[in-house]
Image (cartoon, rainbow, N blue to C red; front, side, top):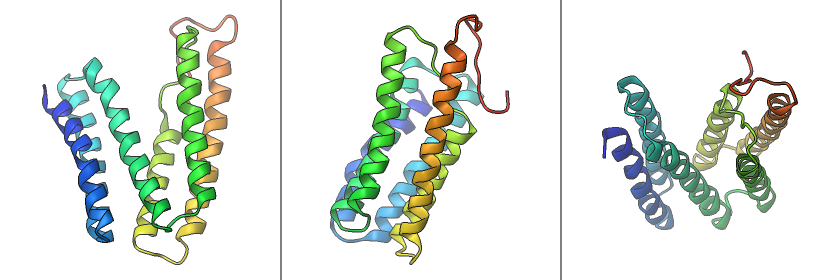
Length: 180
């Protein structure tokens, strides 16, 4: 267990802490747990790449920890009535589609598109939207819908890049991403 994997494990442990704090109605403290989880995500990736501690286990567990925290946050906000069923459904539909598509293509031996700046920006936009929801900003729902719309745009870009990467004659080790 190296430091990046420990930080990822810590993120898993933060999920029930978040849920317990949120369930007690402490919105700001619950949000601070989400922020701490986000910071450990940034930190573990930075340390892993910088020190050459990238592991197969870390590559599998890191996105799983991120998704489980995100799902916990969205479900808790939904069940508490802070976001609409439509918004939650759109978020889950997009994420499940991306996950399922990636798995199907992987198992069919297709090349997959690595994360790019649009995917990272989508995550940042979602977390800003979640922050607005936690702070009960009057424009939170509108902003969250804008982030959802951008996430679907990102998904379309990923599909286009996937098709380009897997068209006949494309290089076996070629990677395509925005700005490349």
